[in-house]
Image (cartoon, rainbow over all chains, first blue to last red; front, top):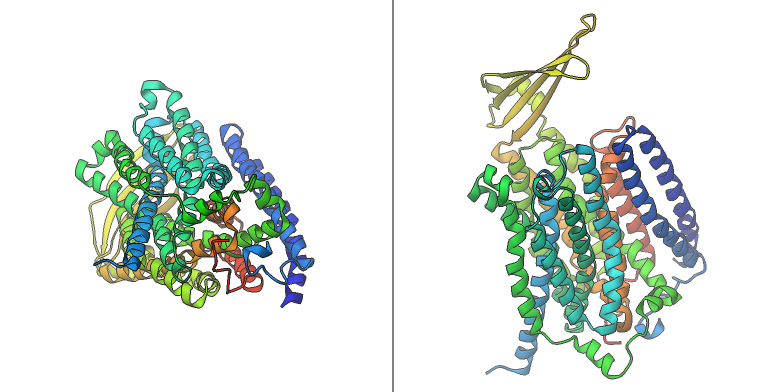
Length: 83
Length: 510
């Protein structure tokens, strides 16, 4: 199981920036498709909030993957004293 | 004669009641805004659709996705520094006060742009308060509960989000039925907001009488309180890795299952299947009513068999069954097909004609109410556009609205929504105990609040937006939007299955 945890760690490291890239592409697509004026401002605002909130989450996913690769999750703490 | 054991049980019952009531009211306050968003838009926002949409975006997106996790950090830190009791008392006052004040804001026609700005500010305060409330209530109850019954006791807190939704829908429907639709739209919508102050007042009175968590009091007496909970939670690797695990292996999947079962289902029935406004809400109300006891059943069961596999089973069942369930919703409400063979009667048509100013085209709308042999009724709206340029042929579009279901189909759909809420109870019932047991007392409030609100608020809250986005892709079908909750739940299921232990640390006193 520990080997699977480490292999999957690589997947999470790759998945983080992939999601951000996908969100940027979607944002550009949808903002360009919105009518010029307040509708475009609104779409830009929505996507800005989504990207701002997802950048740290995806960074978190990459750190999670990194910890996985490093074997940090091989043994989870059995009590708070282990933390 | 009462025994010491009876006194302990009685005291825990009071703790659960005081905590759950306050949390339920906070959820009620948060949801009535969402349920009344259209009326609030008409009354308090400018009539210009663009400006109104912009303010709505800020109110919904900012309150749900940014301010809620921020509230989790602010109040989580406070709860780990000064104590659970006073922190979640503060969140209750902020939530109740802002909800009450929303009900008092004069209309846009009276005070202009001050009205939507006040709504926005108060909505942000609501989001902030909600971010701080849940972690405090769950921690407070868990720190009173004995080890073998922590899942059972905290599951009462878990019922509050669903019951808050139920209460908000119930109060709105009852107020509307008593006052009538015109009076409700004019001023009656304020009543559910104003009512909040009474509920909050009672809850504050009860909470004031409660004592601080014994585990936190002991820590404080020993001088072991964390000097900087934020730093310890997120800069200390041993804690931070557990925060990440809680988010990606549990709360992320829980959030999408929660929002799909209780919000997306109702929205899909109303907007995609074109069910009547009340019909779609009655379906949800029945489903919630039948499913709510299962929060406690699964919470209690998790004390015996562990939290992990109950939560993950809820995710897995969602992954497997969402698409067949929603396909049934479409098939069972396809009145356009049914009327070809089952049409019983058609009302006299109502015809309206209007000119489309920008193109000098004209639109003729013919509305008829049809009844099928099985008792189902619906509105058929035929819109024909006659173009000013006579060389272009007329374009015709047929749509349906206000579909009511035959009795048997209604109850089958109630059963299918009940099943989805049952999955919510599986993922959500045990999760408070799971999160509490993951972190030490010094930083528990901070550490569990953030993953909960990112999982629930961000991943869950985005279900309607991203599902609509996916459904807009080329070649998509009405079911395509489900790939978002299915994808997130699958990711969370894999992470949870591989990385989380079924047997957690049951000692929360350390």
